[in-house]
Length: 90
Image 1 (tube, rainbow, N blue to C red):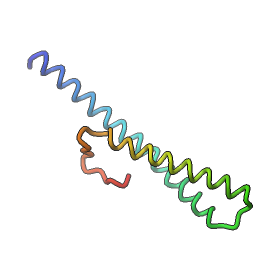
Image 2 (tube, rainbow, N blue to C red; image 1 turned 90 degrees about the vertical axis):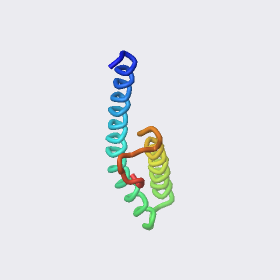
Image 3 (cartoon, one colour; image 1 turned 90 degrees about the horizontal axis):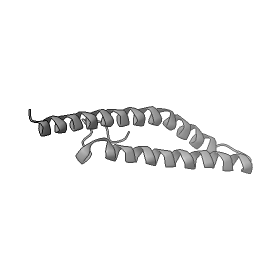
Image 4 (cartoon, helix red, strand yellow; image 1 turned 120 degrees about the vertical axis):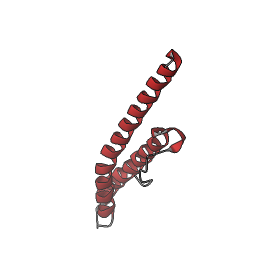
């Protein structure tokens, strides 16, 4: 291998390692986030005081915002949008 090819191979390996890290981070955030969002949405169906409803609505809004940020990580996870067969709903 030439020095240039070796450098390209090193960059590709680093990119693959970074993509794997992003996938793990997404997974570790999405799992508890799904629970938090679901519980907040269930609470919003209950008869709550106005103060409690506002607090739960804030939790839901922030969880949705975080879900959107995690979804954006999918876009940078793999060049060209490749996700190695990963489901698109994660």
